[in-house]
Image 1 (cartoon, rainbow, N blue to C red):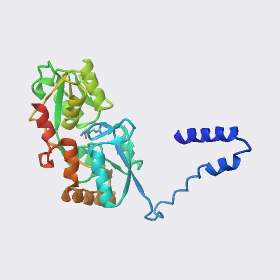
Image 2 (tube, rainbow, N blue to C red):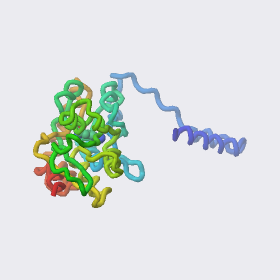
Image 3 (cartoon, rainbow, N blue to C red):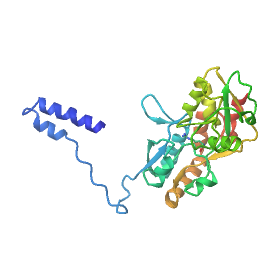
Image 4 (tube, helix red, strand yellow):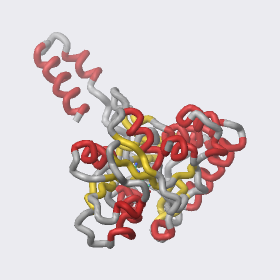
Length: 284
Ligand code: ARG
């Protein structure tokens, strides 16, 4: 779209200056993109790995005012890429369909706070874990909810097909009409604010961040010891052994040289040894 607009401006400019500046305009005409090298024939020159991420998940991945994709996951993968000497480009990719985009080769890897699960392992490969997480409940400040079980008869918002969705399904049953599924976690949290749901269940880091930055004193969080620990991994297409090895090596390297800890501290303020601290910090 940008290119089209740029061209139109360029053409308009050329028309206006017809005759006079035609040569100059011609010179500025962007060169046609070089035909991509046939796969396999590409030299080491500039292979750019496309990273899919659902950038509505602060502080892990979100878009800043300029539309730039930023966050903990982005810093981690950028640091891994730098270590590994590969080039990456982040592309905002809706959660629904993100795994398909990987399977179809539209994305080379995914970093999107993706919990490593046995079910997902059947259709994609994961690096070693890079972050510890758990589910956390968000409710309005005046709510009586004090544990997960209390959500059984209530309307609960989740992001569709996340681990939050899974745990609530287990509690209420697969077909419960009280599970309200949203395209993104912020949308579910907005609905909580609006009163359309009684609670939201999502990853601790995101819930804590939202409550801190958006919901003022309107929300509180409730943790439950029954939530099983989760770990995030970077996903590659099943069988993409080379890329997986490159990423795993890079991850081990940034953990060993302190880069990972520095990134962790930038976002969560404590050493990564206490990876579940966002939850504990939030629940009090
Ligand atoms: N960790 C959860 C899962 O893997 C939620 C991840 C959602 N990530 C996102 N960027 N929206 O199911």
